[in-house]
Amino acid sequence: MLSSAFQFVLISLYLTSTLAASDFDWQTLTADTTLNWKPCYSGFQCSRLQVPLDYSEPNSGSASIAIVRLPSTAPRTEYRGPILFNPGGPGGSGVDAIVAAGAAFATVFGPEFDIVGFDPRGVSYSTPQISFFKTDVERRFLIPFKEIVIYPSLNASSNAVSKTFGDFGLLGQLALQSDTDHYLQHMSTDNIARDMLRITQAFGFEKVQYWGISYGSVLGATFATLFPDKIGRLMIDGVEDMDSYYTANVTNLTIDVDASLQAFFDGCEKAGPDICPFYAPSPLEIAAKLDALTTSIKEQPLPVVMPDSHGIVDFLFLRNAILYSLFSPYDPVVGFVSLGQSLAALAEGNATTLYTMIAEPSFECQASPPPFHLNNFEAYIAIACGDPEPINDTVAQLEEFWMNGTRVSQFSDLFSVTRVLCAGYKIHRQGRFQGPVGAKNTSFPLLLVGNTLDSATARAGALKTSKAFPGSVVLTQDSVGHTSTVAPSLCTYGHFRAYFMNGTLPAPGTVCPVDAELFPSASGNITSRRLPSVEEKRLLDAGREISSVLRRAVPRRAL
Image (cartoon, rainbow, N blue to C red):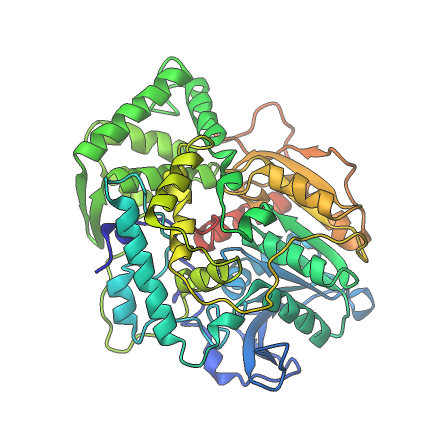
């Protein structure tokens, strides 16, 4: 079994078998070069689109892209085509996200559009599916939680870097062993971008309309670079530093992480002990309390046994739970309010509250399991490690890499795992796109969205990427957390709709407030603001639904 680092939870795709696998059998659809829609789920339509596996040799094989749409309800004369959505990862299922939140998307963008989710090649319901294992049992033996994104800590022990290097090297070798048909080299962002154009053309349009968050920003920027004349509307949100992505160097992505944690300390102190039980008279003292608690848990972990799950809250679990909260700080389940309560309980010796924030049900072998489709971790490896230049760092170089990263963020021990992971992956297609992104002229200007503080993709990534696409505009959402979806904002939604409906870009420098608080008052109301109208409430409810779905789906940038 791989190291205990693999056993600690972070992100669960709880849109799982209860949502997609049990409601529709994708194997009943035959892939075609046209879109043949069949009713699926409830009120949706599904299709499989056949695309070339290798665009340089179109006749050498094909991939099948799973696509779901919530059809436009506007009259045909008002129909504006599809808006494609990518929820990030890489490895997130666009199908699952839209099945869960398609109606909320339509509320934000309007009934004139088809709301479209697609699983990128290799991901979830699309084929050939990325898989390094022969059986689901083997997968769960080596990666105990099939629905997670994993952050081992390179500071968990004196040999953590070498142990993690060995673990990920094993996964890399299993990838090589499983790739008998040599298809993994084609699971690349540039090919996914080409698939997006094919999807749009199959709808009968020549220019792409797209919203991509997190890794979806890489996909969108890559598309705009390859096809600058094929942009109808292109919005990227939670924008990565593209150079960092294409070199597997995450350091620049982490520049907002510590400031996001400081926002928790500041907010907890202002909220007071009734709302934030981890309170202390100053943010500095709260930070010191957390340091002391982290040291204590590292020295003496706490076991937790629950009816449907069990585990250990130790240094790894605590660090990841904190980071998870930084990604979704407004969320009622894992956000700052829950974090303050959980840390206070943990300081009193009760680890159950923290554990339940991100607990994963225990694995059970099933006699007849549903077809496996939650392959986000394997898909992440194949895409995120197959895109950049090969990483051939030694253990000593990887140790130096994460230590250098601590100058930027105290969470470097978690984020730097990406580079260790990619050092073990050895499948790369010659001639793939590796950056840089950018185009002097695009057929329509891009809209980029960045939060004031984003713990996974710092706003600096949006500003840098915008410079590569002259005419583009950065919209800032004044919030903490990963992507604009962390909190509802009538201001943000207004700009989204204006961009897609009318092509109206926000004025440069526009900053949108959010209609949420990090530490709400006991009544749960935002003070000093008028009550929303019926339409505004409908938009805010839709935003909360999108936020909840995407947190459960792919709430943060993988590894």
